[in-house]
Amino acid sequence: MCGIVGLFLKDPKLEGELGAMLASMLCVMTDRGPDSAGFAVYGAGGKDSVKLSLRAARGYDFEGLAAGLSGPANGMPALVLHGTHAVVEIPQVREAAVRAFLAERHPEVAVVGTGSRMEIFKEVGLPSSVAQTFGLAQMRGTHGIGHTRMATESAVTTAGAHPFSTGADQCLVHNGSLSNHNALRRQLKREGIAIETENDSEVAAGYLTWRMREGASLGQALEAGLKDLDGFFTFVVGTESGFGVLRDPIACKPAVMAETDQYVAFGSEYRALVDLPGIAKAKVFEPEPATVYFWERAQ
Amino acid sequence: MNAIAPDVTFDLATTPLRELNEALHKATAESNARRWRVLNPNGRHAVAVGLAMPLTVEIEGNVGYYCAGMNAEASVIIHGNAGQGVAENMMSGFVHVRGDASQSAGATAHGGMLVVDGNASARCGISMKGVDIVVKGSIGHMSAFMGQSGSLVVLGDAGEALGDSLYEAKLFVRGTVKSLGADCIEKEMRDEHKALLAQKLKAAGLEGAVDVSEFKRYGSARQLYNFHVDNASAY
Image (cartoon, rainbow over all chains, first blue to last red; front, side, top):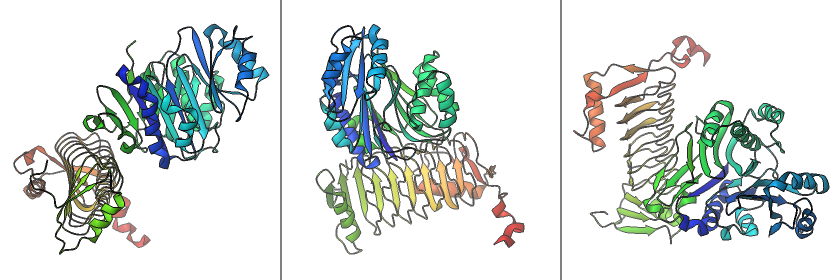
């Protein structure tokens, strides 16, 4: 099992509520995945800056780290603390220097994800405590995805928690299990895609990143995934401007969607959607198997 | 919404689901409360399961998994969508989904009738054992897989692998069938089949609404291993 949720706002008036709506959806999915939880939120971001979502041990001195980053980042980076995670915002042109610095000097710090707008948080524990620790309910943004995990293919660790991010502003949550992830992981590593865990879902994320790097749109990358990914999956993926859903041809894993003039919402079960505004009048439907769904924000 | 006032109303926003199901299970043939109305189901699983009396339960909203599962004699009307396994293992009675049904609607059901006004997704009527299912929309892949008896009537289209490994369940589809499963074939629609189909449509409240001659009939070719007498000695 596992629970996944996603929310893509069409109405900017709801952006202040995105985190609160996503938190409520995530917590309802606790009994599908009580081992760990995580979420990604696409919030504000500068065109010339990039946000690094960092993770370290409890009590880690992120302020000291940020001070140390002022060298490679060419100035003191903006820092927002979220418990075991912190988001630092640096000039985009300094990203490579900062990442090299982190890799060399701070192996104790993991880069969970990067992007101009995406922030990503994940931790072991019940979804409610994970959401609370990171202050999800207070976050604003245009879209977000979340996951509650019941571990099957790899251990209950923070590194094994979703969402997985393998490219800038790209993330994926997965309910299911892939059977060809080992071969695909080797292939993707040869293509230069950074895959850090033994988790099957990270391979799916890496696969989409690879496809998009090679020029595919999110929709085309998902379409190609139908051919190349073997196993059970319902994916919800996020990009800087888009939000997509894909189920395997057998449709082993559940999925329900709701669409109104204000939003598109995804839940493993309808229960996750019941507190959304106007849900009683929403178009509620089950996404078809082997069919790519995606929505893009107007630029 | 209902012309006749219900005898009992349960609001699941304020009353635990278990209390509703317990109250429904306690109903006897002599109970005065025959009509029940359930508000705010909010996608909860196992709403109105295991009913064993001729009650009428109207549910106002979308339900989760297994709604009206194991139903016997009761009529359960869902004014909304139903999650996986609606009316699974139903024995008798009537279940009506006014919206769409998710996967495995009417799975393993032995009797009664399930009507879905919208679409039913994959595995509708999987391993059906005597239930009559009428879907006004379309059905998903692997429907009626290993269907043993009963009927599945679809006014729309059917997805891939319809009737795979079918036994004696009778399938009628008005629209297109994406593909037939192993050992499932189209069969001649004779008068007796038209009469049977008309009878099922009438029971679903669709008398005269559709022309039975627009349907095609599908059934088992009886060619799989289990149908060969040569293999009987293996048991």
